[in-house]
Amino acid sequence: MRALKRASQWLFVLLATTMLAACATGPQVRTDYDPSADFGQYRTWSFYSPIAMEESGYSTWISDRIKDNVRKEMEARGYRYVEASPDLQVNFQGVVQDRTEVFSMPRSGVQYFYNYRRNAYVGVPVWYDDTHVSRYREGTLTVDLVDARRNRMVWTGDAIARVVKKTPEQKMAEVDQAINAIFLQYPHRAATP
Image (tube, rainbow, N blue to C red):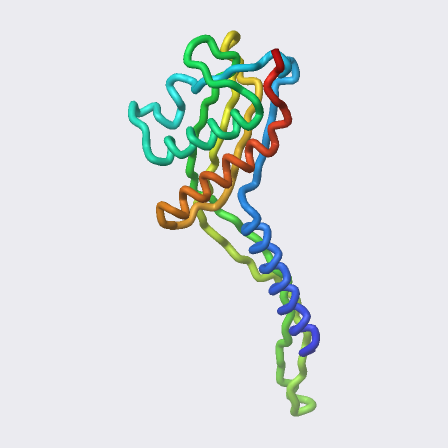
């Protein structure tokens, strides 16, 4: 019985380590695109107006950091920034939501019962599920590329991660990592003239 209990404890430690390793690798990234879009025609870009994250009418240091990162990523792919008549417009939005995660862990133990006829205790193995509830905040940073001529989104990428209290410097590093992770999934380069 002790071996079984020790094995279940090691299983829990292994599961917890795996979950922490998955969290430490960065945000989860999801992308989607318009299959009718011709990415070979896009050469120039600008920011969408108004940017979804700045709908309130003002910018923040986070939105400025995102803009700087988007600019670097677009230029690295050969796109040229222009104010008037761009081929693509980049929009972005950040959303934070409360989440609840519920999971069960199989557990085992031994229940002892007193047997009056034998005048002794008897151990009976017991199996049950140990349910854990975790409440946390999840942030999603979305970057959209919009065909400016048609005003139609042609590509989108989301970076999703848990939100925890951090210093402004740590937040900047997370923004950098999220934008980089999103654009790592963008397979296109600017069209050559």
